[in-house]
Length: 112
Length: 113
Image 1 (cartoon, each protein chain N blue to C red):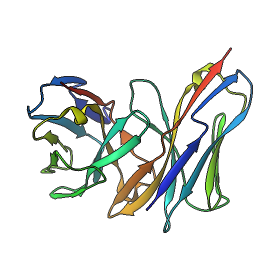
Image 2 (tube, each protein chain N blue to C red):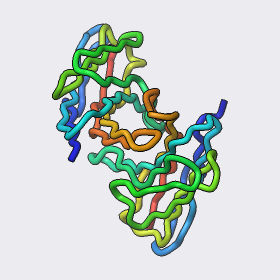
Image 3 (spheres, rainbow over the protein chains, first blue to last red):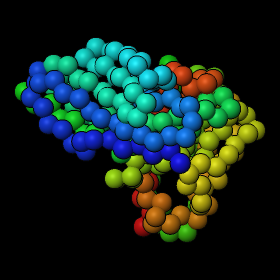
């Protein structure tokens, strides 16, 4: 059974203070690893999909990396608007799409 | 460009009542799914559909029913509401193979008293 564990549960950063969020997983077969951002009162917003160990993807101040056992979301020089809950999920390919198994998220707060 | 639209945004039910949560997408996505989000437990899959006329159960399907008569709509029915179904419900859709990620609706916050 797929399992996804995110750490830390909460993280408080000063503006400009870079850090990384961790997503470790156990999986029985080939899967996609997804990162989402969720703002309070809203649905998750897609950020990245990673499929292969060594793969990296970037978007503005965010960079996601993948190994065989974990994924990191690196946040470089964060701004207050980066404050949100970041979710990772494993995607099991089913027919034409994915069934996602989510972690419980990391709540990020970036302060001035 | 509406994306995924969920209605209602908020709902309060009494134990034993039934209701339908509506979900519609305008992106012609084949794959649609329902998740519930509870504090400390993450998002959990309730039911999903890979196309019109095809549905299947997810991780927590008990007490919920779905149907998919069109590509655009995927309603979730609560048959007899229980306090344990108090949660935030999200509908999501995905293009084929899901590589581009899901698009989620803004959620329905349901309270069962």
